[in-house]
Length: 60
Image (cartoon, rainbow, N blue to C red):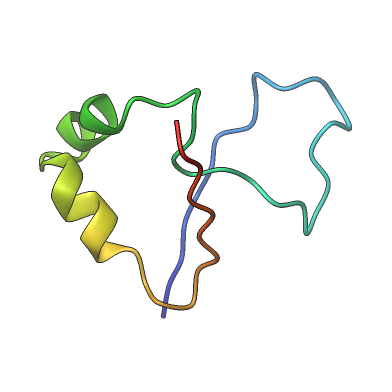
């Protein structure tokens, strides 16, 4: 079973509704900083994402 808790308290009221899509890793998140917070490396975060999740690769 997959579960996650996201802290959305910094968002304006009503800007995030139930069922909304969110970016877990994107242009506003530094992968290596996120990995450090999780006590691992960026590669592990990327390879640990389950196959059921939608991925969108954007060429920078």
